Amino acid sequence: MSEKLELPVVLVSGKDSFLVTSFKGELHTHKGVINLEELTEKNYGDEVRTHKGQSFKILPFSPSDFFRHFRRSATPIMPKDIGAIIAMSGLRPDSLVLDAGTGSGMLAAYIAYFNRYGEVITVEKRRDFAEVARKNFKLAKLKNIHQLIGDVNYISDGFKKEFDLIVLDMKDDYVFIPKAKDILRVGGYLAVYNPYIEPSKRVYEIMKKADFVELECFELLKSNYEFKKIGTRPVTRVWHTGFIVIGRKC
Ligand SMILES: C[S@@+](CC[C@H](N)C(=O)[O-])C[C@H]1O[C@@H](n2cnc3c(N)ncnc32)[C@H](O)[C@@H]1O
Image (cartoon, rainbow, N blue to C red; front, top):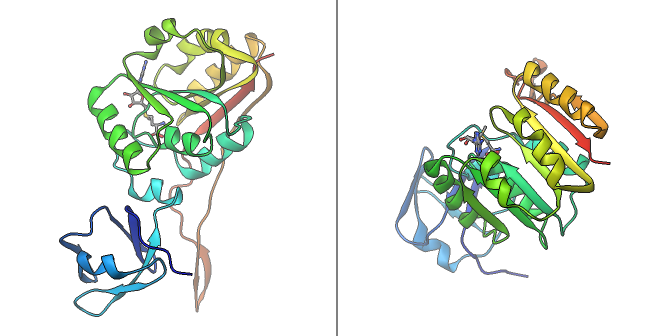
């Protein structure tokens, strides 16, 4: 059954993926130029050709496209780490989540998507970064994210609610741990992402002293492979992204 296109859509050819947010004008790719007006007559799964005859498939924009197509400000968390946070932090479709700092909004967007009936409050101290994230949330049509601009250490003084999950990806994250414990509900989780082991160890030790249970500090390594006639080998050059500390308030 054919399904009419709804913006945004993605045009995919092999490993290439292009984001389309308008059915007007032209899209210039290294495989040639696509007349976007042609898309108005198409359905998902149809193909569209560049002026050089190269074919692209038309697919709906999906959460896997957040990472490919979101604009970037601060370095976003990688999907493998986001997946672990979502799977290990008790996230339900109706959770109340605090995310600091917002950065590009990558983590906040994935959490909001899988928390369809809940809410994400995301705090960013830089207005310009918050603006980039706002555009990303709009692209992803996420309406359950509330953005606050300021230092989470002060802004959170106004929080009365009990959060189900707090995620931190910001410098000096350890300072916020006592406050995070105060505003988490019993059974709620705190997940802290850090690219370096020393701050992660510090976070782990502070969370241990603060009686968080099910406490873990880990990193995930993802290795991509290429398959050639001569043989198979990993193509991932940078393995390390960051460490995650997760614990549960009791
Ligand atoms: C690495 S980025 C976060 C990336 C984000 N998790 C993502 O996936 O796109 C860290 C962000 O924290 C913000 N930040 C640092 N300290 C903060 C604070 N005390 N309160 C709010 N935001 C803070 C920085 O401005 C920066 O944008």
